[in-house]
Length: 369
Length: 228
Image (tube, rainbow over all chains, first blue to last red; front, side, top):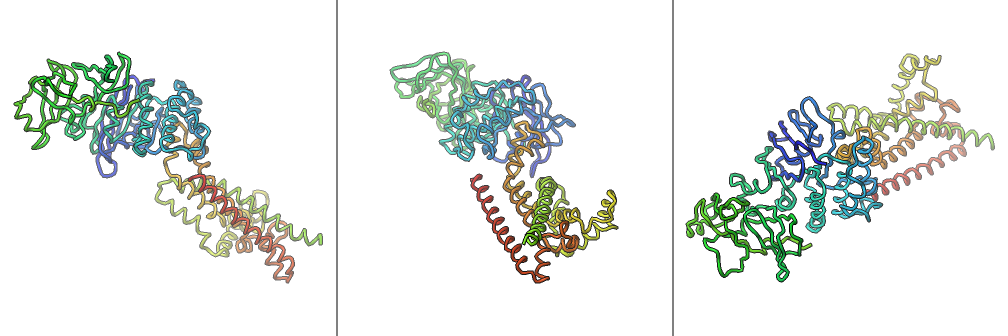
């Protein structure tokens, strides 16, 4: 179930203290993250798409259907959206099963095709043991899983998630993230995911919309937005680029997985994985250093020939350098954060060929499965 | 002795009938009104809320006086009575029900409104995103969530109607079998120095009041337990 033709959203009007003027498009499948500081209007965008907030001027199109296009305004209960709120907001008077069935039954009565089956969602989210329990008897992580399942079972054409992890502690987050990744991998359903946590973006998003003060500043594929020197993300301490890699082999002796990206190969400490599998690696700018010659005695095992595409000074001390992988610099993009001193000492310049060095341990997944 | 018990039972049964019917009507009228008061953004809704709450402050005789005018031959009540050939609704059981509805309204509307306000906007929004229409949401989410409030409202409405005196005295009079309720009966017995009968009913009321308060406390405790 994907929204062919994509999602288009234009909203104008005043909300509270600032003028809202949002205009962005997102692909009809995969995860689109709406990222920005707290209070920039991300949640309002999501509420408007669900029909819970009404902008006087606006146009919301999902796939072939216009949900809002003045004077048309489809009320929320007629929009096939799933909405996962920040707090699970389960119905306390119903069991877990009752909560899950709430939207499922109504979707069926409304004649929606039940492409998302009850048992599949229960399996996907590991809810079997919870079905007859009352929401009051669940942990925070379990509640949020039920809320996600409940939204999925209403057979949405678009799933809206409003910081679904932010009310949870570290442990519960780690418990839910794999479920979200599995959801992403198994369903074509487009997801709009609001967050102010860059780590969640790096793990889940395919597409990124940057928001600031009621405006969409940029929108595009994740890696393109992460590595655009004109955008504010590159200037962050935790700036990174997420690359779609393909497993290429496994070094049994040292437990290193080879991952191919466009224009280079990384080795990453990992459990074994069969070749030809898609994996994502996130390379932080602070973990990348540059060398003019291939080092011959170093513990750094990822040394990738690349070319300097652009450099942007961040402050008096540091620059962020945009690299293109490969001899010709035509491969995937990478960011490196270097001091101005090193830049001058090595006499680096745009267009120059360099070696990007990344410690393997910096690429290790946060958790071994 | 037999005549004594029937003499006492008649007002008791009449009171239960009056309070039961009043409570039923109040739940039917008060629930939508409380919903509107809880959800509406109209600026004048607090004015309506104040009108509903007025019997809390007004002396029952004042309320009774205006009700008497309204129910009498020259008021709307008289006009309604003329539909079936009557002259007035005052001093009838029907008139007593109408009076009781006004008198006990705040005790029913307030707890229901509080219950509707307590759970906030969120469950209703969740229901809407799960494809429930507003009416569906009201029935399957709002009412079940407000159940403790509805129970409190029913108990308070019933108990308060049982206890009314001033309004009944003004618009009902003292007609055995149609307007002579418990409170009037007690007053009557004391006036005529029939202490034993006054005792019988009064003590019954004491037990009733205790049971009501105990029931309310238990309902509230259960509601709190469910939420925790």
